[in-house]
Image (cartoon, rainbow, N blue to C red; front, side, top):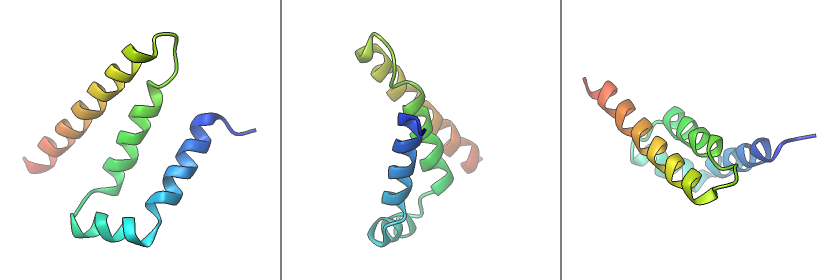
Length: 75
């Protein structure tokens, strides 16, 4: 049986594979790997008793991950 995170990853993959989304990714020269890893970071922090704190933590990690990845690629 699939976990909720597995189902969300699958749904996210389906959305990313849509032609209009692929065109947007290509036109804006976005990194698909970065998008998938950032989404995984958000999923990692979505469960818990204090949902508001976990959402804030997930967002912060998401932002930090993207910023650090972009800095590394531009160096």
